Amino acid sequence: MTGLQKLLNAAAALCGLYALVDGFTALSPALLLAAGLVVVCGMRLSPVLAAALPVVICPQLDLVISLIAAGAVLAALQDGMAGAVWAIAIAAWLHGWLAVEKTMADDADATGFNWVVSLGVPLFFGFWLLFFWEALTIGLGIPTVLLPPPSMIGARLVTSTAILMADFQQTFLKAVLAGYTIGCGSAFVIAILVDRSNFLRRGFLPIGNFISALPIIGVAPIMVMWFGFDWQSKAAVVVIMTFFPMMVNTLSGLSAASAMERDLFDTYAAGYWQTLFKLQLPAAMPFIFNALKINSTLALIGAIVAEFFGTPIVGIGFRISTEVGRMNLDMVWAEIAVAALAGSASYGALSLLERRITFWHPSYRTK
Amino acid sequence: MVIKADKLNLDFETNDGVVHALRDLDLEIGAGEFVSFIGPSGCGKTTFLRVIADLETPTGGSIAVNGKPPEQARLARAYGYVFQAPALLSWRTIARNISLPLEIMGLSRGEQQERVERMINLVGLDGFGGKFPWQLSGGMQQRASIARALAFDADLLLMDEPFGALDEIVRDHLNEKLLQLWKKTGKTICFVTHSIPEAVYLSTKIVVMSPRPGRITDVITSDLPDDRPLDIRETPKFLEIAQRVREGLREGHADD
Image (cartoon, rainbow over all chains, first blue to last red; front, side, top):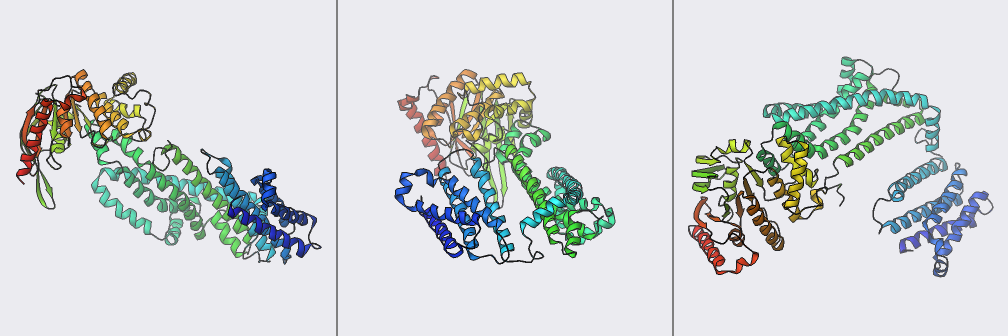
């Protein structure tokens, strides 16, 4: 074990020892078991034992102990709980950290893709974030209006699935997807036209710039007047928000091919469309994907905020604004979770697609 | 006559005034010749190649490529051009890079494949057709770009310092290959270089140029034998021609 790993191990063992001494009579059997395991694990610091039984320093052992301790703490969570429980919570986290440290150290020399490190570590990190959120909100008795514990939000997600689905459908599947497609698509086509004509370039760039500077708070009510209460007005807001980033990025992308590559196509006497499809568009792909990724999150924000200004009684933005007024903060958080999941999923899907299409770009190349 | 330049002039307008890139250039290049252009930076050798390729437009005089104005020659795909850098498209494999001009010309798939295979074999890149350019060394990339220019099968090959960025060993090797290729195909080659040995080794005719304004100071016809092993560079004949090139270059500088 490295110095840091020994330090983590020692700190965890001290926490476990404190928990045993301080709360021996008060702790539940599960917590006692967890504290006991943590203390026993401290014996690994002895070089003799580690040399005789190398299996005891494997990361899986730390992972199991950390999960047992975390589970015992979650089961015993209550307002104003004993210091011994907090000590076990910290020991659990230290063992989790230790498990990750060891896994990463083992993986440092490995080549290729490692699922455990690439997916497991971020998931594990997320788990600990939720764990401390839960422990702190319940253990410190924080009012749920300020910050509900994740378990309460999770319960909401399960019990109100129908409402959340309807809102997701209204805001994401209708407003965001339609607005995003129209906004990005029209910006792409116009960028190609603008790239070809100096006249259009002079005309469109300032207009695009102007539109992107319009405050969404001012535009949204106007769009509601123009296109009605339903999703069409939200899609219009999304179109306005996504148009400019897409146009500007596509334009820089279309001029990304080097002068030499253009000369090359000239020496082939290649026509406009051949140059566009075989040189300009492939070279523009990294820029275009950049815009698509930026816009995937912008579009969601635009649609949600636009719903604050008039909407039928469905939609993520509508639900957030009304449930805040009714102090149902768990519902608000559930909607936020849905929106965040949808946003991350579309961003992730675009990133995967980008990796496939622009595999040749220096940032993705594999030998 | 493949190329005939008569009192060719080209001036660039820059912020510091007019730059005479080419001044009163007269030159004739016959079919099957290997002509090197040598001279210090700014002497207009690359510019002249670009004029032949219709990538620059002359401001005076006349030039004919295959008896036609350069633009018509370009549209008729009269030449293949090899740039200083390989300029391979990084999203295409080597084979698909070589087939790029053929796709643009609208050749059938079968013909494309047949020619690509032949060109890959010609430049000795067998087995690398499926690789991407960034997976190959600089020398291999430049060979691929030569294969791409040859795939065209134009009778004229314009090469702008194609080996300038390569190390000496790779350069010697590619020079040897290029000579074999020229002999096998009988193409007319215009070759821009900075290197005196390279120019003398490769050429049947060496055009020495000097800068400000870019002009021709000497045209040397080499009488080295057609068969040129690398060690011909140690022979007195070779050194004599190299000496004359060097003097021509010095003369151009004395005017400064």
